Length: 88
Image 1: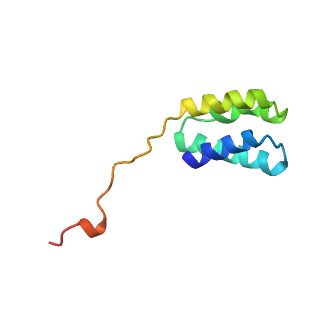
Image 2: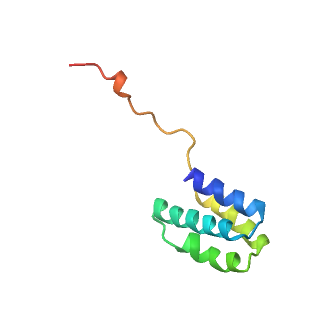
Image 3: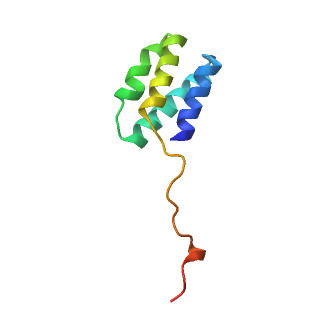
């Protein structure tokens, strides 16, 4: 999820509305929808019109809302590695 969010932020900050950027934006919004299981509304439905018109001020607001919506812990609890398991 961190990668998806970082890519969305990068695309909006870059401000280029080329075809590749728009496709990457749509892909990453779709992945967030799947990974979070929150559906389309917080991701693509809210973003569709601002992306179509390339409304950068609105896209920047959506980026900030996205970062507030998804709080991802930086450290995951560690899993024991196969090397740390004692043989029986």
